[in-house]
Image (cartoon, rainbow, N blue to C red):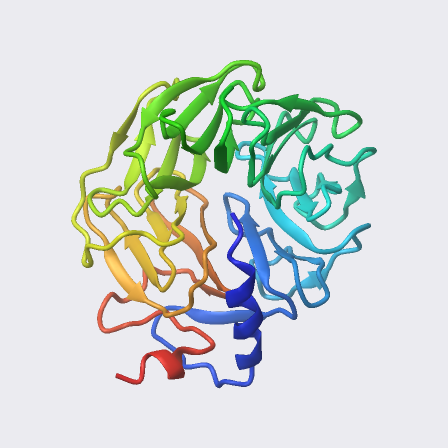
Length: 360
């Protein structure tokens, strides 16, 4: 999922603002470019960050963020990055032109796949999913009017690509995509027009056919973030602009989805919701463009951390079912972390322009 370009450009002018520390969250690292995604393995030892501006490269950490190293990557300007949800050592990133790079060692070394994603139109690359090691790659462009064309699938690590047309109707906007570890379940979020159903679609045949599995009210309401929990074998998603129970989850077949009924400190529509879920499903973190909604009870209740960051990406790593190992979120160029559940009040998650927004 990409954050709009214009907010990033003007916010880069504010880098000289002094960081304001907050209890729990600590500034881990400030990068030179705007962050387009973060990944972490189940233990929180291996982390990767992709950038689209600045030096436009990928950084990795093999020590839970204590140190970061710029990776030697063949291309620059990465629009998205993701890891295999089961075999998290396999990572893929795609640049704005459809060039794809893959790693089999948590992002420490990279190679470019043989062919470029054959984009139908010049729409922005917005998501990638990784399965079967790195052999199955699923790349999504933001939208297309050519019979729903927005997905491209490779089953040979990028040697060739096929067009997984997506739900077969015109005038759709594809918002995000996720897959389980072997790509037998691919879930695509679609904002549809012309009376077509709006919601989540499931493919069990690598995008050849699709079934509507969760309908969402027409309008601006849409799923903008989906994650697969490998331990529980279910998907979680955050619904954009849904003010009641915006976190949903699937059954193990991904054929039905239910709202997780919970209490929220602020009733408001999610502007750019990005979701991360722990190994056991107890820790759910949603970054909501200026608010970090944090649940420690599987979504029954949430604590809010107002960051004023407009960041979008969150990551949760837990090494076992009871102990949180690492929580991460990004604020454009900066990554913040904590290895404990943050103190809920009056903590505000820090942001590099917090002094301008939180004066009151």
